[in-house]
Length: 151
Image (cartoon, rainbow, N blue to C red; front, side, top):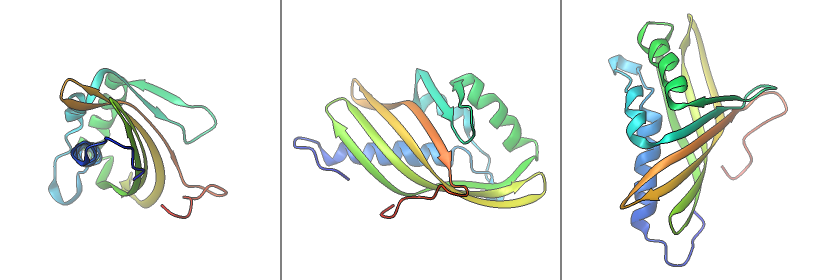
């Protein structure tokens, strides 16, 4: 974590918790029920999610992002799924924060097992006394694109 003068460790701990809750929202491994609708509590209402793993970014508002994942994770297409943070770099300045998050995800999609690593960029804003996610964008490792050393 990059240290900014005046940043309370409590803020970093809150961001750690929000990030863990985000990743845990999708887990349906070992009989766990995913809590994708719980994302509404983690984001500001105007939150944006961007999947940028191909040639064209897929940009979603919360409803557009949550609805298909709710179906995917609960109707048997994606099973034994788990996503977790491997490491992070978090910077906090006053009421804004940014997190670069190396993550790992694995599961069985349409009967085929997979494991992938990627990076998420997560922006947070502080509202009153709580932190909320304002946006997330991600890209996955692929040929020619690997997680930087140090993550």
